[in-house]
Length: 268
Image (cartoon, rainbow, N blue to C red; front, side, top):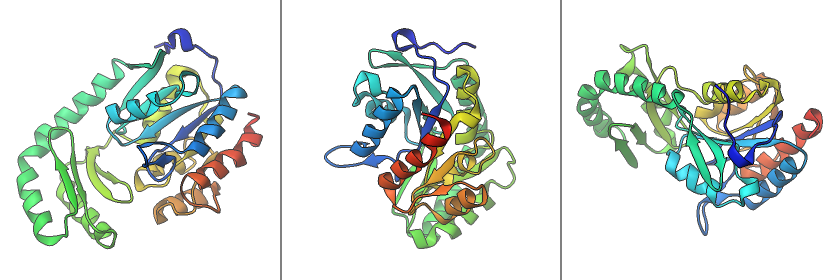
């Protein structure tokens, strides 16, 4: 499959893959990319590089965030929910990468047909034993948010729930824990994007901070991985064990430091 870029066509050979929440986001006065991140991405574009947004947020939310940027700074693609790819086509439009997206959705539907009859039972047990701060359970999501001190215990409980289904997995970030098909991952999504766009994985800088980012930060896809100083302990361990760069600052400022650290090494 050839990557379609419409009137935004450029020969991208080096790429930055950014998580959003905790890595590159601001929330006031509206949810958007941190201004310092935008400045760095402008420099990256000026030197011939590109970037993608790789987040577990809903596709529509990420597309809205991407469209807040000037046309010449919008991402090459939006990667969402560890399963969907939308390619920049120009004029603020992003096109779904088919049949990839539909194949991911069919895997999800198949898993949900097996799991959803158990949802009410699992919900009752979780809500009886944990302090639930928020939850989303529907035809796309089974996700819970509890206080940080209860995260490890909740995740072990949810893993126990899905253990009879080897094609199910548990994922999450600092706050949320959720169930996904075992074939889904941020690394798998990024790898497929690189395959259709002709970008060598070793030319990627990947930055994230949450449990769900580990697959793209453990150096199995690219050696150029990093995280902010306030990343979750699992990410700090994965980045450190893979020889990646742990920034001295937290949040988006730390992300800026990671990008600057690797840009010189990749020549852009």
